[in-house]
Length: 469
Image 1 (cartoon, rainbow, N blue to C red):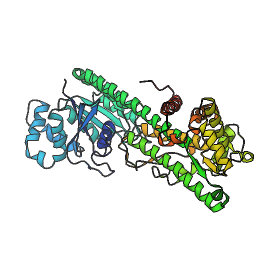
Image 2: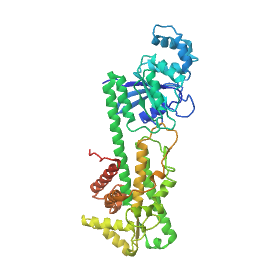
Image 3: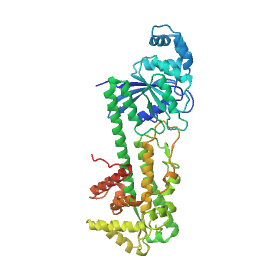
Image 4: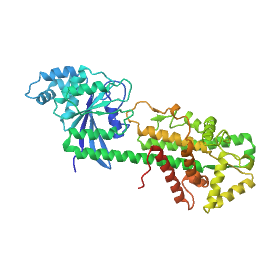
């Protein structure tokens, strides 16, 4: 078995080295990330594992702070070669004093590193100090892979850096963004490294392939979590006695409690997505995800959005209660949610299950009313969770600020034939209240088929079908 790759991550102060490592290793807690210069003061190792194997070891190094003065000092050192002069410097007193930080970087590179990843802030102009850094690293007789960071941000001047790197003899390079990595850029980085490290080409290709598999597995697991949440919410049903229903204050309290329970399912789904992508609970918000105490929750029961959802689905403006819930089973007062619920129940009779309809008729005769979630709420929830999943999949782990999801870009619910297909797939859950808790006597297989069908639908929204195991 080949030894893991050792990659020294080097560069100027505040170029984003620690942030890069957080993203590459999916370790949001590694090191310290801030806008203050010189945050990293010591070299620190971090492992990258995939498929249960240690594939690479990164060395996070302090920033190069005075490269122009160090280059002049190295040029005065004794030695027949540039590498010998670097070693003479490391053995001298200046490596423990004036150039202590730079010495830590060079030692990390010379002490067993296979390659240097030179992190460059692409927003910075090409200054003499950066050219001096590149020359110093070339003296260490190790391959150097420039990695242009923050390429997606305003003010990035990647084109100027491309020309400067070519002038320095560095024709291979990679581009990245630790806050929002380009799609596939992580795997591409290791593929590009194979051009500099031919002896480790097989390892690097295996690493890129393992990371691609991991990304696919996370996507499928995320869609599965969303599908589970949608099935659970579609299955939700609460009974309300005739007395409570007749009391306006008590009815409002019941509705409020039910809304809170719907939001609880949404919270748990959001928390599962954050954990799946190795983020902490406070790393994303819309407006206050994952507590969901702001606009994100309100959208699920926003009357205007619910009416718009009904219009897009061809139901006009009659969406039932403005709170987005059904609390009336009287035939004269059927609304969208009740009609969907009864339709699903009749469908269960056709498939052989008569008890749900019997329970409904008995409840009606006894004056018991039921609440269930209307279709527009399900569509809004599906869209919000898909939006969060997509954003997290494209999110780097080096970001300092919490992820803010844009309301404006996602203000409308899912609509059209695709939305109707999703509702059709969720219809079986309407007939099985116990599916909310992931149980149901004798219908576990049917619930699983429903979850998988919804996950397939969600995957098609991503552009391809979920592969079967």
